[in-house]
Image 1 (tube, rainbow, N blue to C red):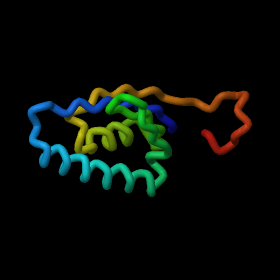
Image 2: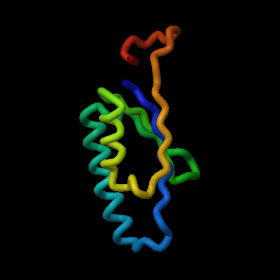
Image 3: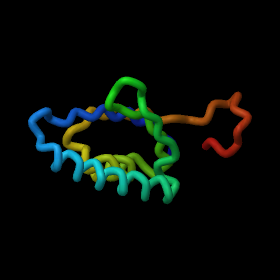
Image 4: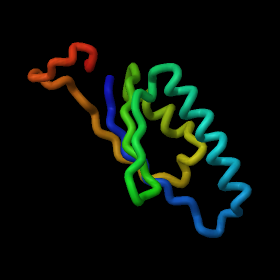
Length: 96
């Protein structure tokens, strides 16, 4: 199942820099492992914002939920999820 996920990061301004940097480092390692597994297919930064648009390829809504709540930055995120379906006019058979 493919999902588009927008993540807006809202780290509190009073969070110590060292703590924020540690959370970001753990988040990076977690997200890169999911990318290597093929579950986090794409990630794009939104210019001028601390936000991204990502495409996930997972088995279920529950798997996506578990991945998202496992993000170290999850407590500091606003997340929007949109389920995606293959368009009948698409020429790419691999996008299912």
